[in-house]
Structures are given as structure tokens and as C-alpha cells.
Length: 148
Image (cartoon, rainbow, N blue to C red; front, side):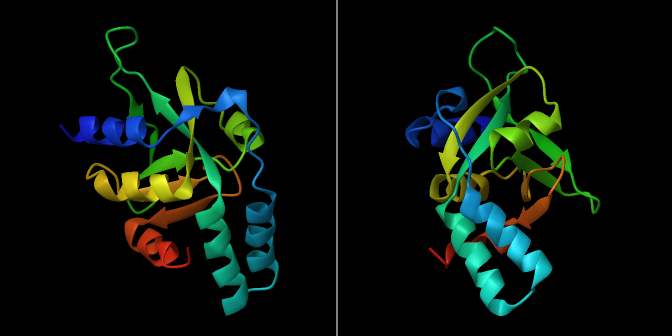
């Protein structure tokens, strides 16, 4: 049942297969670098705004491989044991993860945050889990959403 809620959210969010477009999120990358090099409330607020403006690459796995359309998000374990859905800011970050046998969709932040909050099987997301990692739990996502 929980998987179907996730898939239903994806189906109605107007997703598309990511290979057809180029996602770069240059402003998001700059905001992450700015916060790490010059931490401030303004830099944090700018990062939150860019996180809300971004379109993300979201990898999905088909565990049934050919037995229907039962896909699930790629989930990684955080150091504290939380389950975080993997998302990526651009194709280069996705490629560095070396994920295989996945389907990639693109989702705008607004729809992604709604989907993550509705999924009881995960605790949040991790942006670019292979490198330049930014974990965001559901509480942080709620705070970020205010900056829309």
C-alpha cells in the first residue's frame, strides 16, 4: 500500500524520463558552495530558496524487473540509521553514483517534497549521495518548504 502511494504521487506529478532533458541546477550548486565557504543566515536562506526552485533527478528501482510497474525509490542508510531517498542535482552527480538498473525521472522540488512527506518508509532525502552530499530529513524539508 505504501509503495502505491509513492507511485501514485509520481504518476500525478507530471514526471518525465530524465534522459530527455538536461538538469543542471547551477544556482543550487552555487548556493551549496556559498554556504560551505561563508556560512551565514543569508546563505542558508538562499540555499533553502534554491532547494525549492530546483528540479531533481530521482532514481527508481524496479524490483520485479518485467513483472509490472512496481518501482520504488532508491534508498540509502544514513549514519544514524535513517532511510533517505537518493536524489540528484544533475546528470554528473547521478553518473558518479554508479547506480545500475534504474529508471530516472525528474521532479520539481514542490512535488518531491510532497511525495517524500507522504512516504512513511523513508525519513527524508539525501541530495547527491555519492559526493557533495546534503542529507535532509522530513523536519528540515518542512522548514525548507516555507521558503517557497
